[in-house]
Structure formats: C-alpha cells, structure tokens
Length: 202
Image (cartoon, rainbow, N blue to C red; front, side):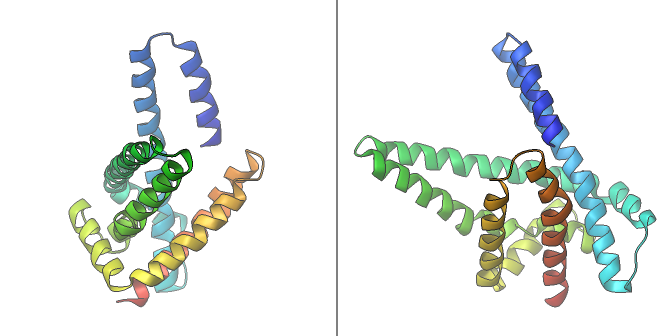
C-alpha cells in the first residue's frame, strides 16, 4: 500500500486537470479497497479454519479470496463513505466552534469525530469478519456486526482503543517500515483477535 500511495502521489502531480486528478483518486481508492478486500478475505479464511480445525492451507486462502472478495470490497466502500461523512460533519460543526475560538474548534472536532466513530462506526467493525466466518452477504454482515457490538460494546471499544494507540505509535516509525509492521504483524493479529471474539460469542 505504501508503494501504491507513492505511485498515486507521483501520478497526481503529473496530471494538470482537476477533474482528472479526482478521477485518478477515485480509481486509486477503489484499487486500494480491492487489494485490501483480497488480502483480508484470504487472511480471515485461513484464521477461521485454523481456529476450527487447528490447521489450514494455502488452498483455503484462495478459496476465501474467490468467495468473499466482492462482499468485502463492497463493505469497505460503504464503511469508508460512512467514515468520510462522519469526518465531514465533524469538520463542519468543529468549524462553527472555530469561529468562536481556535482551541474550542479543534477540541469540538476531536470530540465529534470520536463520538461518531465510537458511537456509530464501531458497530460495524466486525462486518468484514462476519462475511467470511459466517458466509454472509453485505446486509447480513452489517446486521450481525451491529448486534454483536451492541451486546459487547465495552469489550469492543477497549480493543479498538488499544489497537488505535498501537497503530499511532507504529506510525511514528519511518515508512515503509511502519506499513510493513502494520500489514505483516498488527493486521493479522487484530484479525485473529476479532475472529476469536466472534467465535467465543457463538
């Protein structure tokens, strides 16, 4: 993803038209979502099989990619749109406070953003997992995630905060090393915890 980001940055600077830059940004974002959906589908498939059968294989990785990439891709697009809306609303409302006081505006933005994430987005944090572990479509994955988080909100919030802090600390490391650590260590470990969490609630 780091290399793709660098490539996208260079391409955008070569494009003069604003419309072309927007189109390229959309294409790059969709390509990034597709790569994440492929990787995540295969990863969850292997983790789920390992937990259930105490073993797994590369075949499972590719079967999961084939069966769940499209669903995961759609989920990523939906969740990103929701996250963007929450961010825009937070920026707008924070801007209203910014007219009164700079510090108040910044604090208001952070509070609103955290409230939006902790009060709304967190309920769909298991959707990408459910679609693979329970072979669900987009709507059922979102509903299952919502129901699970509603039942175990504080536990899920604790996990989210811990991994947010870990992610921010790793971000202090120079690229591409930070991206490598996140992709090869943090993301698989987070996926393992989330899959285990779902299985423990069955």
